[in-house]
Image 1: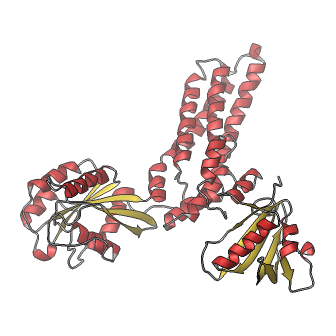
Image 2: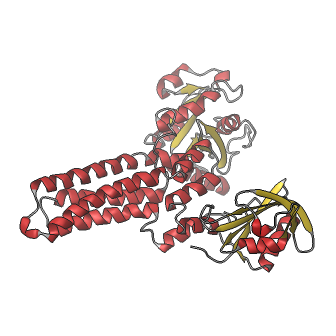
Length: 450
């Protein structure tokens, strides 16, 4: 599928060593002929595909020395003919060369249009496109690996394999529907049930990975909670290795939720240093406390900080109750001041630390991983990280459950409807049955140059 020529800057906008302007469509080489002047004897129209040529690039009112490469369809990123200009990085240079491509007939590319054309031309599945944007937006090793799993079509191959099994079951059902006088052989019914049950078991296995995959992609939300002046902000600063939160001996210094990020075992942990939770007549502090409660409610794990140098207060006990139903790590802070034995017995802490000296604070990230994941995360296996994929697989699994229950109890066409519904739900992942709104939403997450 060859479409009109589109053009965009494919590298980050700004000052840099090299920038890339990409043109894709039916005849990008014709545009290159009018704006690239090779240093050698080979004319642009005779360029060998996939080979870099040096020369001058016309930017309208100036020229830049750079390179040009031609990609012949269908062996290109988009599956169309493509040309790339590699010029010096810089706002004026890249803008001038891009505007020159527009003057010669190229249309400005929209968000994700190059990748969307790759999808439409069968170069990438929809799930692979999602993996690509996840990789581009990654902030941790775990996010890169989860995105790469999708980008390399591993999920697509697994889903299509399951779809093929469902198609085989539908073929067997159709054969029996076409010859109803023969009836559904018990052996055929057993084979269909075995196939449907086997596929559903695989879907349930994939669904079980989403709890981990969601956290790998979106990060683990950690709410640091405690009464005022227990050292929450100091612990945050220690974990971040720089002073993000204001530290003061005055109670109520933290008026809002302060955020920071650490990477542990390739996973991003979003830390939220909350205002001390207590009753307050100060309107600003009260709002901060309200936000702290919301941060605790939305957290994957709570880091409860208690001042171990003082007797447990009612506020401490209230926070223990408030976080009782959460994944929780409890630390007694201020070991440098001496932890009271009575506090240690009543609280059963996971660690005793000193935010002042840093003692044992370095153990907290590993404790967070253990609490959330049961240890380190295996990022090399199959992990469902996209919410869209989770709900598509869940819906497919529910349809197959209905099919399992109906095989010996309902007419064949009713069973066929449930299996077909499961097949279509799985097709939403690969893109075979995805709606236009889903496709447009996915590509709207891309930058213009990709």
